[in-house]
Image (cartoon, rainbow, N blue to C red):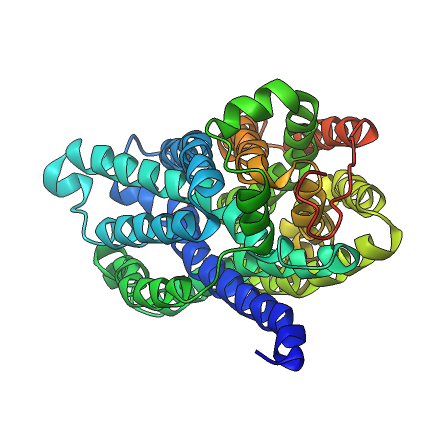
Length: 433
């Protein structure tokens, strides 16, 4: 191998890692977010018909949605362990496989009207499998990039892994938008199934890409120099409990805001009379801007620090909580679209764009996958009930003020966690830092 090839190899590895992370994450989160959209628009009637009040049906549907978040810490535990012991690549192969198969099977499920209680029971089981897969995906997708990137540009490159999350939602929303062009009767009878069924082809593409990616440089170095940790989660709990707890707290605002500005917003918009197509278009536009802004905020965190940029996003989300619902209930299409763009494209992007680098710098390489996965997924469990809580608050008060107050309170917790967040920057290829 020539010296020129040697010098180019890290860049080639990084480019492949970026491509594999973005494409794989996009495909996996397309599957995961299909359920979120269907839970707000379809599943209440198809699988959870509990009464005549549409809010009650939606509440039951969101309870099934929340089960997936309850399963995500289990996925983080399982695949964090696999990722720290066997490798990031092996873990990411299985997360994508489980997600793809589960999503395809959801598209084949008979309705409650046909098989009764077995329908929602089977849906919940498949949602649990989705949650397990998603719980292992985030940390691996992040590390695929950040463990191959320079410390000085880890914020920018790490944020690229998150664009797959946003693009996955854009694709799922667009798929539902196309399905909604069918007649209402055809859409409810069979059209909603199409976005789930076509995911099997997308899944095959994702598996092909994941099989061609190399193992990360940090993992290979840690395995060679230190050997694998045989109980990585135990090491995280014993040696890094503060990092784990504040990581969980710091993420609460981002994930709660995402649930409310996307999933609950769809249900809220329907209740206040916003056409469903406008809501889906708003979510799609908001998440597209979200994906484009993530690398911008990651780059800003390289310049001004992770904590400062992340805190700015949490403050902005708290301040925008009530105006978001005012814009949504205004009856004006431009204002509805503006609500989604500002809520997701600025407030949310400022936090999720910084998360990969910020969380990667909390844990050493030999237990990093487990640390990232548990910090990320335990916070998902804590606020996975956000759409349920928000729907219950709005059903009781018929006013968005309590919902906005709930989000403000969660943002305050994240700001407190950021104030005590221990940052131990990862030196390039220094896996013991």
